[in-house]
Length: 118
Image (cartoon, rainbow, N blue to C red):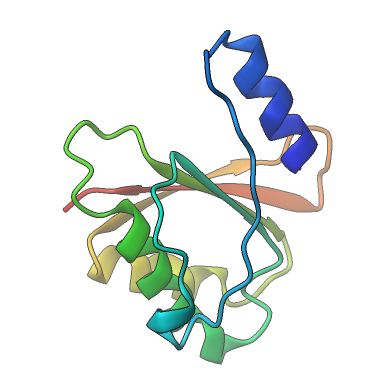
């Protein structure tokens, strides 16, 4: 996914395109990278129901106060993931908007686009 993200950035002819990854503990804000992101990409993040609220808090932290509405998170989840509805509801309560679409070329996955709706 990171390789595709980088290709997309370079095809848009952006003068400065970079793709990076980070490791963090969703429940510990001190581990969250202190940098700006245009796009957050994640996959298979809603495996446990207990991870939903911390995930939503991380997304809100990075997406809120986006007055020009250009930041977004793209999350890929299996169609069968039962916690997806709980995620969508929790995200809505935190001021996030979630759009769900089929994942291109993979019928057993969905793509969730998350933006700040504040």
